[in-house]
Image (cartoon, rainbow over all chains, first blue to last red; front, side, top):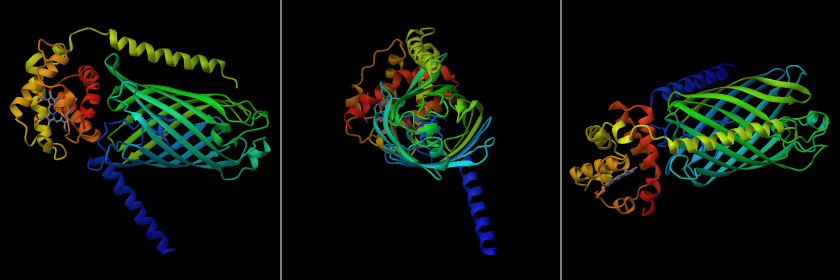
Length: 286
Length: 147
Ligand code: HEM
Protein backbone atom coordinates (compact mmCIF):
# COMPACT_ATOMS: atom_id res chain seq x y z
CA UNK A 1 0.00 0.00 0.00
CA UNK A 2 2.78 2.42 0.97
CA UNK A 3 4.58 1.63 -2.26
CA UNK A 4 1.50 2.32 -4.33
CA UNK A 5 0.80 5.53 -2.48
CA UNK A 6 4.31 6.84 -2.94
CA UNK A 7 4.27 5.77 -6.60
CA UNK A 8 1.07 7.70 -7.06
CA UNK A 9 2.64 10.63 -5.27
CA UNK A 10 5.66 10.56 -7.61
CA UNK A 11 3.41 10.25 -10.64
CA UNK A 12 1.33 13.18 -9.49
CA UNK A 13 4.43 15.32 -8.93
CA UNK A 14 5.64 14.34 -12.36
CA UNK A 15 2.35 15.43 -13.93
CA UNK A 16 2.44 18.76 -12.07
CA UNK A 17 6.04 19.38 -13.11
CA UNK A 18 5.18 18.57 -16.71
CA UNK A 19 2.21 20.95 -16.55
CA UNK A 20 4.31 23.77 -15.15
CA UNK A 21 7.03 23.16 -17.69
CA UNK A 22 4.49 23.14 -20.47
CA UNK A 23 2.97 26.41 -19.30
CA UNK A 24 6.21 28.29 -18.78
CA UNK A 25 8.91 26.97 -21.09
CA UNK A 26 9.23 27.16 -24.80
CA UNK A 27 12.36 25.09 -25.19
CA UNK A 28 11.00 21.80 -26.38
CA UNK A 29 8.29 23.11 -28.72
CA UNK A 30 8.62 22.36 -32.41
CA UNK A 31 9.34 25.17 -34.84
CA UNK A 32 6.06 25.07 -36.72
CA UNK A 33 3.91 28.10 -35.99
CA UNK A 34 1.40 28.27 -33.17
CA UNK A 35 -1.80 26.25 -33.74
CA UNK A 36 -0.64 24.73 -37.06
CA UNK A 37 -1.07 21.25 -35.56
CA UNK A 38 -4.74 21.85 -34.77
CA UNK A 39 -6.07 20.08 -31.70
CA UNK A 40 -6.85 16.36 -31.23
CA UNK A 41 -10.09 14.94 -32.59
CA UNK A 42 -12.08 12.28 -30.72
CA UNK A 43 -10.28 9.40 -32.44
CA UNK A 44 -6.82 10.69 -31.52
CA UNK A 45 -5.69 12.25 -34.81
CA UNK A 46 -4.61 15.86 -35.11
CA UNK A 47 -7.60 17.81 -36.34
CA UNK A 48 -10.64 19.55 -35.04
CA UNK A 49 -13.02 17.88 -32.60
CA UNK A 50 -14.93 15.44 -34.80
CA UNK A 51 -12.84 15.21 -37.94
CA UNK A 52 -9.11 14.77 -38.67
CA UNK A 53 -7.18 17.49 -40.46
CA UNK A 54 -4.27 16.87 -42.81
CA UNK A 55 -1.82 18.52 -40.41
CA UNK A 56 0.28 16.39 -38.07
CA UNK A 57 0.14 16.59 -34.28
CA UNK A 58 1.90 19.36 -32.39
CA UNK A 59 4.44 21.70 -33.93
CA UNK A 60 7.33 19.39 -34.90
CA UNK A 61 8.94 20.26 -38.23
CA UNK A 62 11.74 18.70 -40.29
CA UNK A 63 14.26 17.03 -38.00
CA UNK A 64 12.02 17.41 -34.94
CA UNK A 65 9.85 15.03 -32.94
CA UNK A 66 6.67 16.09 -31.17
CA UNK A 67 4.40 14.52 -28.59
CA UNK A 68 0.81 15.42 -27.71
CA UNK A 69 -1.55 14.26 -24.99
CA UNK A 70 -5.22 15.08 -24.76
CA UNK A 71 -8.23 14.57 -22.58
CA UNK A 72 -11.73 15.16 -23.91
CA UNK A 73 -15.23 14.97 -22.54
CA UNK A 74 -18.61 15.50 -24.19
CA UNK A 75 -21.94 15.67 -22.39
CA UNK A 76 -24.90 14.71 -24.59
CA UNK A 77 -28.53 14.41 -23.54
CA UNK A 78 -28.38 10.65 -22.99
CA UNK A 79 -24.67 9.85 -23.25
CA UNK A 80 -21.30 10.98 -21.97
CA UNK A 81 -18.14 10.47 -24.03
CA UNK A 82 -14.67 10.48 -22.46
CA UNK A 83 -11.52 10.21 -24.53
CA UNK A 84 -7.84 10.08 -23.63
CA UNK A 85 -5.16 9.98 -26.26
CA UNK A 86 -1.52 10.51 -27.20
CA UNK A 87 0.06 11.42 -30.50
CA UNK A 88 3.59 11.27 -31.84
CA UNK A 89 4.85 13.39 -34.72
CA UNK A 90 8.00 12.18 -36.47
CA UNK A 91 9.67 14.94 -38.52
CA UNK A 92 6.30 16.26 -39.63
CA UNK A 93 6.01 13.30 -42.00
CA UNK A 94 4.35 10.61 -39.91
CA UNK A 95 1.87 10.81 -37.06
CA UNK A 96 1.13 7.84 -34.80
CA UNK A 97 -1.70 8.01 -32.31
CA UNK A 98 -3.44 6.00 -29.66
CA UNK A 99 -6.83 6.85 -28.16
CA UNK A 100 -9.23 5.27 -25.77
CA UNK A 101 -12.94 6.16 -25.83
CA UNK A 102 -15.58 5.44 -23.24
CA UNK A 103 -19.24 6.14 -23.89
CA UNK A 104 -21.39 6.11 -20.78
CA UNK A 105 -25.00 5.32 -21.61
CA UNK A 106 -26.40 7.55 -18.90
CA UNK A 107 -30.03 6.93 -19.84
CA UNK A 108 -29.91 3.33 -21.09
CA UNK A 109 -27.35 2.17 -18.54
CA UNK A 110 -23.95 0.60 -19.18
CA UNK A 111 -20.93 1.72 -21.15
CA UNK A 112 -19.06 1.06 -24.38
CA UNK A 113 -15.29 1.27 -24.72
CA UNK A 114 -13.03 1.21 -27.71
CA UNK A 115 -9.35 1.62 -28.51
CA UNK A 116 -8.09 3.34 -31.64
CA UNK A 117 -4.60 3.20 -33.08
CA UNK A 118 -4.00 5.66 -35.85
CA UNK A 119 -1.40 6.57 -38.42
CA UNK A 120 -1.25 9.59 -40.68
CA UNK A 121 1.25 10.06 -43.49
CA UNK A 122 1.88 13.49 -44.93
CA UNK A 123 1.76 13.09 -48.69
CA UNK A 124 2.79 16.56 -49.77
CA UNK A 125 2.32 20.27 -49.26
CA UNK A 126 2.15 22.61 -46.31
CA UNK A 127 -0.74 24.16 -44.42
CA UNK A 128 0.64 27.69 -44.79
CA UNK A 129 2.99 27.79 -47.75
CA UNK A 130 1.76 25.45 -50.46
CA UNK A 131 -0.87 26.74 -52.90
CA UNK A 132 -2.82 23.48 -52.50
CA UNK A 133 -2.30 23.23 -48.75
CA UNK A 134 -1.24 20.00 -47.06
CA UNK A 135 -2.55 16.53 -47.97
CA UNK A 136 -2.30 13.41 -45.83
CA UNK A 137 -3.44 9.82 -45.86
CA UNK A 138 -4.66 8.36 -42.58
CA UNK A 139 -5.71 5.07 -41.10
CA UNK A 140 -7.58 4.35 -37.87
CA UNK A 141 -7.85 0.82 -36.60
CA UNK A 142 -10.44 0.46 -33.85
CA UNK A 143 -11.68 -2.30 -31.64
CA UNK A 144 -14.43 -2.52 -29.05
CA UNK A 145 -13.81 -3.83 -25.58
CA UNK A 146 -17.10 -5.67 -25.30
CA UNK A 147 -19.10 -6.13 -28.49
CA UNK A 148 -22.21 -7.72 -26.97
CA UNK A 149 -24.44 -4.65 -27.24
CA UNK A 150 -23.36 -3.64 -30.78
CA UNK A 151 -23.88 -7.23 -31.94
CA UNK A 152 -27.28 -7.38 -30.27
CA UNK A 153 -28.42 -4.35 -32.27
CA UNK A 154 -27.23 -5.79 -35.58
CA UNK A 155 -23.54 -4.86 -36.01
CA UNK A 156 -21.47 -7.38 -37.97
CA UNK A 157 -18.04 -6.71 -36.47
CA UNK A 158 -16.51 -5.37 -33.30
CA UNK A 159 -13.35 -4.14 -34.99
CA UNK A 160 -12.77 -2.17 -38.13
CA UNK A 161 -10.41 0.05 -40.04
CA UNK A 162 -11.14 3.50 -41.41
CA UNK A 163 -9.04 5.00 -44.20
CA UNK A 164 -9.07 8.69 -44.95
CA UNK A 165 -7.58 11.27 -47.26
CA UNK A 166 -7.44 14.75 -45.84
CA UNK A 167 -6.53 18.18 -47.18
CA UNK A 168 -6.09 21.37 -45.13
CA UNK A 169 -5.16 24.87 -46.12
CA UNK A 170 -4.75 28.17 -44.34
CA UNK A 171 -5.75 31.25 -46.32
CA UNK A 172 -3.87 34.28 -45.04
CA UNK A 173 -5.89 37.43 -44.53
CA UNK A 174 -9.05 35.85 -45.98
CA UNK A 175 -11.80 37.41 -43.85
CA UNK A 176 -11.41 40.93 -42.46
CA UNK A 177 -7.64 40.48 -42.35
CA UNK A 178 -8.01 37.21 -40.42
CA UNK A 179 -6.66 33.84 -41.51
CA UNK A 180 -9.08 31.10 -42.53
CA UNK A 181 -8.46 27.36 -42.27
CA UNK A 182 -10.39 24.95 -44.48
CA UNK A 183 -10.36 21.16 -44.27
CA UNK A 184 -11.79 18.42 -46.37
CA UNK A 185 -11.62 14.73 -45.43
CA UNK A 186 -12.85 11.72 -47.39
CA UNK A 187 -13.28 8.68 -45.19
CA UNK A 188 -13.81 5.04 -46.12
CA UNK A 189 -15.55 3.45 -43.14
CA UNK A 190 -18.12 0.93 -42.00
CA UNK A 191 -18.13 2.22 -38.42
CA UNK A 192 -21.48 2.76 -36.68
CA UNK A 193 -21.39 5.89 -34.50
CA UNK A 194 -17.65 6.08 -35.00
CA UNK A 195 -17.27 2.40 -34.10
CA UNK A 196 -18.85 2.53 -30.64
CA UNK A 197 -21.80 0.60 -32.12
CA UNK A 198 -19.55 -1.76 -34.07
CA UNK A 199 -18.88 -2.05 -37.77
CA UNK A 200 -21.25 -2.86 -40.61
CA UNK A 201 -24.78 -3.98 -39.93
CA UNK A 202 -27.95 -5.68 -41.00
CA UNK A 203 -29.01 -2.77 -43.23
CA UNK A 204 -25.65 -2.26 -44.92
CA UNK A 205 -22.59 -4.41 -44.39
CA UNK A 206 -20.05 -2.64 -46.58
CA UNK A 207 -17.96 0.47 -46.04
CA UNK A 208 -19.20 3.85 -47.27
CA UNK A 209 -17.29 6.79 -48.67
CA UNK A 210 -18.01 9.71 -46.36
CA UNK A 211 -17.31 13.42 -46.52
CA UNK A 212 -16.10 15.55 -43.62
CA UNK A 213 -15.35 19.23 -43.69
CA UNK A 214 -14.56 22.11 -41.41
CA UNK A 215 -13.88 25.80 -41.41
CA UNK A 216 -12.15 27.95 -38.84
CA UNK A 217 -11.24 31.60 -38.54
CA UNK A 218 -8.30 32.73 -36.44
CA UNK A 219 -9.76 35.71 -34.57
CA UNK A 220 -6.25 36.16 -33.14
CA UNK A 221 -3.16 33.98 -33.69
CA UNK A 222 -4.14 32.14 -30.48
CA UNK A 223 -7.88 31.80 -30.95
CA UNK A 224 -9.81 29.98 -33.66
CA UNK A 225 -13.57 29.56 -33.98
CA UNK A 226 -15.36 27.49 -36.57
CA UNK A 227 -17.72 24.73 -37.59
CA UNK A 228 -17.39 21.10 -38.51
CA UNK A 229 -19.43 18.54 -40.36
CA UNK A 230 -18.98 14.76 -40.49
CA UNK A 231 -21.10 12.56 -42.71
CA UNK A 232 -22.03 9.17 -41.26
CA UNK A 233 -23.19 5.86 -42.66
CA UNK A 234 -26.49 4.28 -41.63
CA UNK A 235 -25.82 0.55 -41.41
CA UNK A 236 -28.12 -0.56 -38.59
CA UNK A 237 -31.84 -1.03 -39.14
CA UNK A 238 -32.80 -0.71 -35.47
CA UNK A 239 -32.04 3.01 -35.32
CA UNK A 240 -31.30 5.84 -37.69
CA UNK A 241 -27.78 7.31 -37.67
CA UNK A 242 -27.36 11.03 -38.38
CA UNK A 243 -24.44 13.12 -39.56
CA UNK A 244 -22.46 15.04 -36.93
CA UNK A 245 -21.95 18.77 -36.66
CA UNK A 246 -20.19 21.07 -34.27
CA UNK A 247 -19.39 24.68 -33.55
CA UNK A 248 -16.04 25.08 -31.85
CA UNK A 249 -13.70 27.55 -30.24
CA UNK A 250 -10.10 26.61 -29.51
CA UNK A 251 -7.65 28.74 -27.57
CA UNK A 252 -3.89 28.15 -27.74
CA UNK A 253 -2.29 29.50 -24.56
CA UNK A 254 1.07 28.53 -26.06
CA UNK A 255 2.48 25.90 -28.38
CA UNK A 256 2.19 23.56 -25.40
CA UNK A 257 -1.34 24.05 -24.11
CA UNK A 258 -4.69 24.44 -25.83
CA UNK A 259 -8.26 24.29 -24.65
CA UNK A 260 -11.16 23.58 -26.98
CA UNK A 261 -14.83 24.04 -26.24
CA UNK A 262 -17.53 23.03 -28.67
CA UNK A 263 -21.24 22.58 -29.13
CA UNK A 264 -22.12 19.23 -30.66
CA UNK A 265 -25.19 18.30 -32.69
CA UNK A 266 -24.92 14.55 -33.21
CA UNK A 267 -28.53 13.78 -34.10
CA UNK A 268 -30.05 10.44 -33.22
CA UNK A 269 -27.84 7.86 -31.49
CA UNK A 270 -29.06 4.30 -30.87
CA UNK A 271 -32.70 5.35 -31.05
CA UNK A 272 -32.41 8.36 -28.78
CA UNK A 273 -33.05 11.47 -30.83
CA UNK A 274 -31.47 14.93 -30.74
CA UNK A 275 -28.18 14.18 -29.02
CA UNK A 276 -26.56 17.54 -28.44
CA UNK A 277 -24.41 19.12 -25.82
CA UNK A 278 -21.11 20.57 -24.73
CA UNK A 279 -17.60 19.35 -25.45
CA UNK A 280 -14.32 20.24 -23.75
CA UNK A 281 -10.84 19.12 -24.74
CA UNK A 282 -7.47 19.92 -23.23
CA UNK A 283 -4.26 19.26 -25.13
CA UNK A 284 -0.60 19.32 -24.13
CA UNK A 285 2.17 19.27 -26.68
CA UNK A 286 5.94 18.92 -26.41
CA UNK B 1 -28.30 7.66 -44.96
CA UNK B 2 -30.41 10.58 -43.86
CA UNK B 3 -28.44 13.64 -44.60
CA UNK B 4 -30.09 15.85 -47.17
CA UNK B 5 -30.02 18.82 -44.81
CA UNK B 6 -26.46 17.98 -43.84
CA UNK B 7 -25.37 17.96 -47.45
CA UNK B 8 -26.88 21.44 -47.66
CA UNK B 9 -24.78 22.52 -44.71
CA UNK B 10 -21.67 21.06 -46.36
CA UNK B 11 -22.46 22.92 -49.57
CA UNK B 12 -22.79 26.11 -47.53
CA UNK B 13 -19.41 25.44 -45.90
CA UNK B 14 -17.76 24.85 -49.25
CA UNK B 15 -19.21 27.95 -50.86
CA UNK B 16 -18.17 30.00 -47.84
CA UNK B 17 -14.62 28.73 -48.33
CA UNK B 18 -14.63 29.74 -51.98
CA UNK B 19 -16.14 33.14 -51.25
CA UNK B 20 -13.60 33.80 -48.56
CA UNK B 21 -10.79 32.90 -50.93
CA UNK B 22 -12.30 35.14 -53.59
CA UNK B 23 -12.77 38.09 -51.23
CA UNK B 24 -9.18 37.93 -50.12
CA UNK B 25 -8.12 38.48 -53.70
CA UNK B 26 -10.47 41.38 -54.36
CA UNK B 27 -9.66 43.19 -51.10
CA UNK B 28 -7.67 46.26 -52.12
CA UNK B 29 -8.21 48.89 -49.48
CA UNK B 30 -4.99 50.63 -48.52
CA UNK B 31 -1.76 49.58 -50.21
CA UNK B 32 0.10 47.14 -48.02
CA UNK B 33 3.23 49.28 -48.31
CA UNK B 34 1.47 52.15 -46.53
CA UNK B 35 0.08 49.81 -43.88
CA UNK B 36 3.64 48.67 -43.18
CA UNK B 37 4.60 52.29 -42.53
CA UNK B 38 6.36 52.88 -45.82
CA UNK B 39 10.14 52.67 -46.05
CA UNK B 40 10.80 53.73 -42.43
CA UNK B 41 8.31 51.10 -41.22
CA UNK B 42 9.91 48.37 -43.30
CA UNK B 43 13.43 49.23 -42.24
CA UNK B 44 12.39 49.25 -38.56
CA UNK B 45 10.92 45.76 -38.98
CA UNK B 46 14.00 44.48 -40.82
CA UNK B 47 16.35 45.87 -38.17
CA UNK B 48 14.24 44.32 -35.42
CA UNK B 49 14.28 41.03 -37.33
CA UNK B 50 18.08 41.09 -37.62
CA UNK B 51 18.49 41.31 -33.85
CA UNK B 52 16.23 38.29 -33.43
CA UNK B 53 18.11 36.30 -36.07
CA UNK B 54 21.42 37.21 -34.44
CA UNK B 55 20.10 35.78 -31.15
CA UNK B 56 18.83 32.52 -32.66
CA UNK B 57 21.56 29.89 -32.62
CA UNK B 58 19.54 27.66 -34.97
CA UNK B 59 19.75 30.02 -37.93
CA UNK B 60 22.38 32.69 -37.26
CA UNK B 61 25.03 30.37 -38.72
CA UNK B 62 23.56 30.73 -42.20
CA UNK B 63 24.52 34.40 -42.14
CA UNK B 64 28.12 33.84 -41.01
CA UNK B 65 29.60 34.93 -44.35
CA UNK B 66 26.90 37.40 -45.31
CA UNK B 67 27.49 41.10 -45.79
CA UNK B 68 24.70 42.21 -43.47
CA UNK B 69 24.44 45.77 -44.85
CA UNK B 70 23.87 44.49 -48.37
CA UNK B 71 21.47 41.81 -47.13
CA UNK B 72 19.42 44.34 -45.15
CA UNK B 73 19.22 46.71 -48.11
CA UNK B 74 18.19 43.88 -50.41
CA UNK B 75 15.53 42.53 -48.04
CA UNK B 76 14.10 46.03 -47.50
CA UNK B 77 13.91 46.51 -51.24
CA UNK B 78 12.17 43.17 -51.68
CA UNK B 79 9.60 43.85 -48.94
CA UNK B 80 8.94 47.27 -50.45
CA UNK B 81 8.46 45.70 -53.90
CA UNK B 82 6.27 42.82 -52.67
CA UNK B 83 4.01 45.21 -50.74
CA UNK B 84 3.41 47.34 -53.87
CA UNK B 85 5.78 50.10 -52.74
CA UNK B 86 7.78 52.28 -55.14
CA UNK B 87 10.71 49.85 -55.45
CA UNK B 88 11.98 47.24 -57.87
CA UNK B 89 13.71 44.29 -56.27
CA UNK B 90 17.12 44.09 -57.95
CA UNK B 91 18.57 41.08 -56.15
CA UNK B 92 18.83 37.52 -57.39
CA UNK B 93 15.71 35.34 -57.64
CA UNK B 94 14.79 33.62 -54.38
CA UNK B 95 15.88 30.13 -55.48
CA UNK B 96 19.37 31.32 -56.45
CA UNK B 97 19.69 33.60 -53.40
CA UNK B 98 19.24 30.58 -51.10
CA UNK B 99 20.66 27.72 -53.13
CA UNK B 100 22.50 24.87 -51.41
CA UNK B 101 22.23 26.44 -47.96
CA UNK B 102 20.67 23.28 -46.59
CA UNK B 103 17.51 25.09 -45.47
CA UNK B 104 14.52 23.05 -44.33
CA UNK B 105 11.07 23.92 -43.03
CA UNK B 106 12.28 24.31 -39.46
CA UNK B 107 14.58 27.19 -40.53
CA UNK B 108 11.87 28.77 -42.60
CA UNK B 109 9.36 28.56 -39.74
CA UNK B 110 11.79 30.16 -37.32
CA UNK B 111 12.40 33.07 -39.63
CA UNK B 112 8.66 33.56 -40.09
CA UNK B 113 8.17 33.50 -36.32
CA UNK B 114 10.91 36.13 -35.85
CA UNK B 115 9.43 38.29 -38.59
CA UNK B 116 6.01 38.11 -36.94
CA UNK B 117 7.48 38.99 -33.55
CA UNK B 118 9.37 41.90 -35.12
CA UNK B 119 6.22 43.23 -36.76
CA UNK B 120 4.29 42.92 -33.48
CA UNK B 121 6.99 44.83 -31.62
CA UNK B 122 6.97 47.53 -34.29
CA UNK B 123 3.24 47.93 -33.69
CA UNK B 124 1.81 46.43 -36.88
CA UNK B 125 -1.74 45.08 -36.51
CA UNK B 126 -2.78 41.50 -37.23
CA UNK B 127 -4.38 42.29 -40.58
CA UNK B 128 -1.19 43.92 -41.87
CA UNK B 129 0.96 41.02 -40.68
CA UNK B 130 -1.39 38.51 -42.31
CA UNK B 131 -1.43 40.49 -45.56
CA UNK B 132 2.36 40.46 -45.72
CA UNK B 133 2.47 36.72 -44.97
CA UNK B 134 -0.01 36.14 -47.78
CA UNK B 135 2.55 37.68 -50.15
CA UNK B 136 5.57 35.89 -48.65
CA UNK B 137 4.05 32.38 -48.42
CA UNK B 138 4.48 31.62 -52.17
CA UNK B 139 8.24 32.35 -51.83
CA UNK B 140 8.62 29.19 -49.74
CA UNK B 141 8.54 26.96 -52.81
CA UNK B 142 11.16 29.09 -54.58
CA UNK B 143 13.46 29.23 -51.56
CA UNK B 144 13.27 25.44 -51.08
CA UNK B 145 13.67 24.59 -54.77
CA UNK B 146 17.49 24.41 -54.83
CA UNK B 147 18.23 23.10 -51.33
C1 HEM C 1 10.08 34.36 -46.80
C2 HEM C 1 11.30 34.04 -46.45
C3 HEM C 1 12.56 34.72 -46.97
C4 HEM C 1 12.73 35.85 -47.70
C5 HEM C 1 11.67 36.81 -48.21
C6 HEM C 1 14.15 36.03 -47.92
C7 HEM C 1 14.72 37.08 -48.63
C8 HEM C 1 16.06 37.19 -48.90
C9 HEM C 1 16.68 38.22 -49.70
C10 HEM C 1 15.92 39.36 -50.36
C11 HEM C 1 17.99 37.98 -49.75
C12 HEM C 1 19.06 38.84 -50.41
C13 HEM C 1 19.45 38.33 -51.76
C14 HEM C 1 20.60 39.16 -52.31
O1 HEM C 1 20.40 40.36 -52.55
O2 HEM C 1 21.70 38.60 -52.48
C15 HEM C 1 18.25 36.81 -48.96
C16 HEM C 1 19.48 36.26 -48.75
C17 HEM C 1 19.73 35.35 -47.73
N1 HEM C 1 18.80 34.64 -47.04
FE1 HEM C 1 16.83 34.78 -47.23
N2 HEM C 1 14.80 34.99 -47.32
C18 HEM C 1 13.88 34.17 -46.74
C19 HEM C 1 14.13 33.03 -46.02
C20 HEM C 1 15.37 32.70 -45.52
C21 HEM C 1 15.64 31.71 -44.52
C22 HEM C 1 14.57 30.81 -43.87
C23 HEM C 1 16.98 31.73 -44.27
C24 HEM C 1 17.77 30.91 -43.29
C25 HEM C 1 17.40 30.70 -42.06
C26 HEM C 1 17.55 32.72 -45.13
C27 HEM C 1 18.89 33.02 -45.19
C28 HEM C 1 19.46 33.89 -46.11
C29 HEM C 1 20.87 34.14 -46.18
C30 HEM C 1 21.95 33.52 -45.32
C31 HEM C 1 21.05 35.07 -47.22
C32 HEM C 1 22.34 35.69 -47.69
C33 HEM C 1 23.07 34.89 -48.70
C34 HEM C 1 24.37 35.61 -48.97
O3 HEM C 1 25.21 35.68 -48.07
O4 HEM C 1 24.51 36.12 -50.08
N3 HEM C 1 16.57 33.30 -45.87
N4 HEM C 1 17.05 36.34 -48.47
